[in-house]
Amino acid sequence: REEKLFTYKGIAYPTTVCSPEIFKALESFKARSDDVILAGYPKSGTNWVGHILTDLVTTTAKNDGDETNGSNDEQQGEFPYLEIGDVDKYQRMEKMPSRRVIFTHLIPPNLPVSVFKNKAKVLLLIRNPKDVATSFYHFSNSLSPLPSYETFDEFFTAFMTGQMPWGSYFDYIFEWNKHAADENVMTITYEELKENRASGVKRIAEFFDLPLTEEEIQGVVKRSSFQAMKDNSQESHGAFGQTLFRKGDVSDWKNLFNEDQNQEMDKTFEERLAGSQLGAKLKYDTYCK
Ligand code: A3P
Image 1 (cartoon, rainbow, N blue to C red):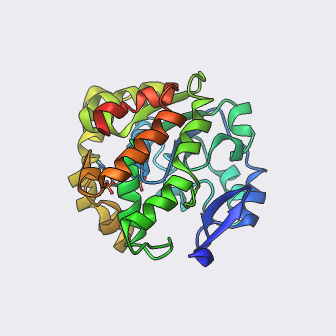
Image 2: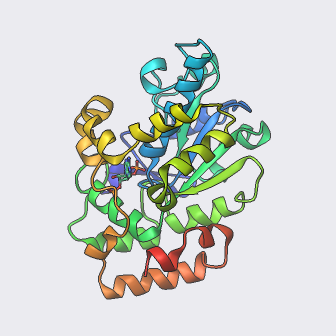
């Protein structure tokens, strides 16, 4: 397990996609006020909301007659995750036209200072911890770059102690909670987006000042359904797509957690997050009980 992860500033990352060198290079990254940044703990629905953002930006750019804009993967050849890539990535990103769409799993203290200093807008995506753990467990056991686990119990211990790629879920929410009231940060939950995708997509477009017509919004909504994204996954993510678009449901944790694990997580949530702004947004009693 250890060889698949390395530690940087006390947090574990997968060796295959991150490196201490890239974290060093990242310090020089210059955020722009018109960057479109998506932050989320792994398995919170990053690819889903990232797809929505890219679609919104690309549609707006096309309306402006700019076919090359909408800085997504295919069009700009840059992997959208901020902390994944090679050391020259940030130099190339400087040449990318606005608006750049950037995803990250990092907590605020580990982001380049320019993100907050230059007032880049950040969409913070959060998902209830029981479903995140469930999704993470299945993902870890189907994709080799991440450590795998013999049993869910073994995974659960790692999750609860934060010995995970990108660190502890609880620390993640705790750290982002300090920015939850920032003017440039908007929070959305996986669950509310599942409940009403159209309303979520509209709020996201407004937050980033992306002026789409009602019809265009409906197009983005349609293209971001679980089924549409799963059907397109071979094209968008290759063989990896089958792993990524697993179930896309709320409450799948009920198939995995035992009573002891339930109680332990309830206790930790209560102690670490229940009284916080983001803790309330997660609607723990609705989705985790
Ligand atoms: P499950 O494993 O519970 O199915 P990430 O992109 O951050 O790795 O998150 C992956 C999770 O988002 C997976 O959850 C995946 O199925 C879900 N997901 C991806 N696309 C989705 C969509 N269009 N609608 C709902 N959930 C989606």
